[in-house]
Length: 223
Image 1 (cartoon, rainbow, N blue to C red):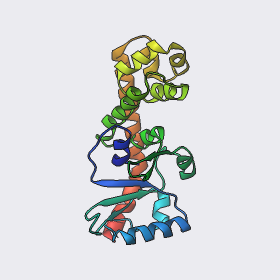
Image 2 (tube, rainbow, N blue to C red):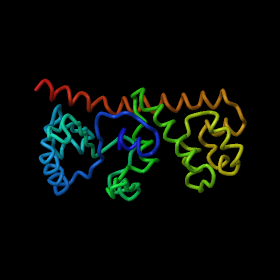
Image 3 (cartoon, one colour):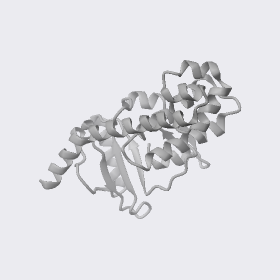
Image 4 (cartoon, one colour):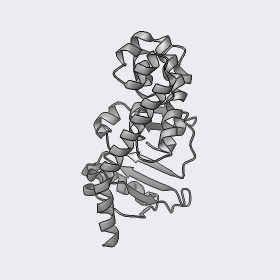
C-alpha cells in the first residue's frame, strides 16, 4: 500500500520500506507473527504489535534481520483515515504477476490515492504521478469508471481541462467538484485554486485525525 505499490502502478518512488494493509483479526495476526519471525523481524518503535493498537489506527513498525532482507523495514496498518475497511480493500485489490510467477496483491489505485491524502508533503506529488501514469496507460480507450476516477482525483489543471473538453458529459456529471466545474470553463487559474483548497482541507483533516494518535504514541514513548 506504500511506495512499493506506487512503483507497480508507474508512479516510481524510491522506498526503503514495505507498507502493508492487513486484516486485524486473531487468526491473521498469528500468521503475521509467524511471518515476522521467519524474517527475524523485531518491532523498532512504539506502539507494540497488538490488535488494540492496529484497530486504533496506529502503524506497527518492524525491522528485518534475516540475511536476505537485512535492514528492510516493514510497516503494517489495519485502519486508515478515509479508507475503506479491509474486506472492501481486498475485494477491490489489483493482483499482478511477476516474471517468476509471484503474485502481488496491491491496494486498488483509487484506494491507494485515498490513502496518500495525508499531511505529508511527499504524498501529493505522488498522487499526481499515479493519476497521470494511469491516464497515459489507459487514455486511448478509457472506460466509464476510469473517467470518473480521473475527474474525481486528477491534480493538474491541464489534465482536468483536457478531460472536460474530451468528455463533456462525464465532466458535467462530476462538476460538483469545484476543480472540474472550473475545468469545464477552461479556467486554469481557478482550477489550480480549487485544487489548492482541496489539498489544504485534506491536510488539515489528516492532521486532526492524527493528533490524538500522536498523543498516545508520546505517552507510550514516555512509559
